[in-house]
Structure formats: structure tokens, C-alpha cells
Length: 103
Image 1 (cartoon, rainbow, N blue to C red):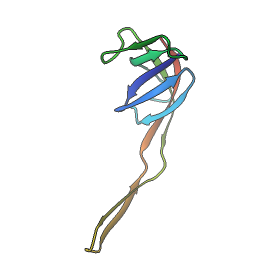
Image 2: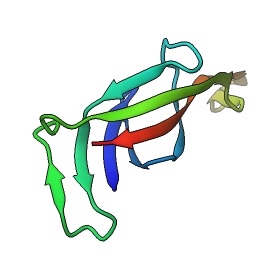
Image 3: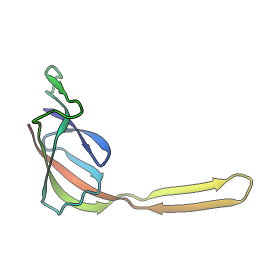
């Protein structure tokens, strides 16, 4: 069974036991998050339910595996012909989630 969920302003297509990386969620490790699905489908795509915006009664359970920092993102700004350059970077905070069940 496939589901499309929205977390942290992004949408993810997930199956049971998938592991996804999302923007930081304020939950502790081994905590459980429950969210509603935007779309639920079987593997072949024959039985599909689409929500407006979510499917009433749907439930997707996620488990927090770990809180970590992602790879460095470089931010380079330049103004041409002015000799003005800035090179900065940051490491975004990421939450690693595992899909436990889709109902």
C-alpha cells in the first residue's frame, strides 16, 4: 500500500517500512507521530483514494529513528562587476522517520 503524506511543508510518497528524511520535527527519538494521508493507493494503482485535502479516517504512523544534521548546503552570492562575493553555508537539522503502518 502506498500513501502520500505531508510533513514539514513537503510531500512524500511512502510505503510501510520506508525510511524518510524530513525537516526537523520536535519529537524525541522512538516517539510516534500520526498524520493523515493526502492519497492512498494499492501497489498496482487500481484502488486509489484521493483526499480533499486529506482522506477522512486515514492514519499513517511514523516512528522517529534519529535527529541529525544533513549535508552542508553552500550559499554563494555574487554581484557582477562589483567584486562583491559572499560564500556561506549551513547544515540543516533533519529528522529520520520510519513508516510503521498505513490505514
